[in-house]
Length: 366
Image 1: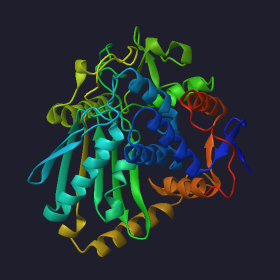
Image 2 (image 1 turned 60 degrees about the vertical axis):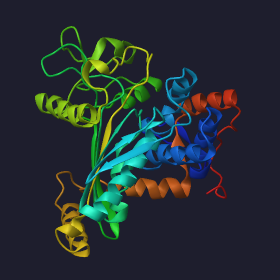
Image 3 (image 1 turned 45 degrees about the horizontal axis):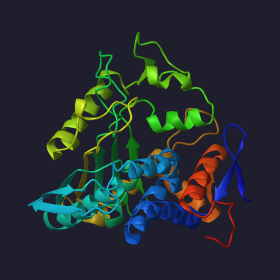
């Protein structure tokens, strides 16, 4: 029962959720993080794997280790929160972004309880993984959650340009639905995330047409060996480009964080701290109507979507967040699928850092 088939028929090893979290925590601790921070960051990292966003989970551990070893990320940050009424500013002290954004989410929720809305921005932060992880935190407290971030590298050009001045700058929104899983959408402003492209390259798969263009002439680029020659394509053409810019200005510039030419190009190695910026917003729906009535209405509308007549015979319509909840339940119960190439990379990393290897799921581990 330790193996699961992926879409290409290859076998992925299912690893117990607790084992994966312990592995991530061990890797971070080996990089100098205090035990509490290592455990907290690991939990946020593997939540991406639990919920079906493997490109932003343990897949990123090797690059985090490199950043720590190069001295580009502070393993023992002193994260500070400065509040001004309904807003707050988090200084991540160049620590792992997961820790800074989690602190921002806690502050946003606390402020929203008092004022109805809490808007919190970060600076001196770093890559924080999947936006859905943070957008889901306010709904767990009965609040609406909004997350936006400036990507740690520029992969995309402004519409009509040939120079990468924009990142994939994601946006995620979570809305509580009572006893049902929350509505949760998490999108990059590019057609495909760079993490997904790197994961495909690791598996030797072509880049889907429409995800990337050749920066010389705008032609589709599908060869993973030519990634450095390309640019990510924005969703909705000029619309995605404009949205990426708006997020960059709000989550980057307004937070005193990097944007535009201040962010490194994806084909260049990092040589300085990223000064990444993120924004977390929490809104208390109880300021508009009784919370139970709001959540019941959300659940009713989501049920209407699920009951809608599908275009394809035998299919069913899903609402954003439904699949995420199902995957999380499955992965916690039966282990998280880790593809062969990634498992080899992780175990090689663990061996170098003195962290026990990841093995197949054992029913007793969870």
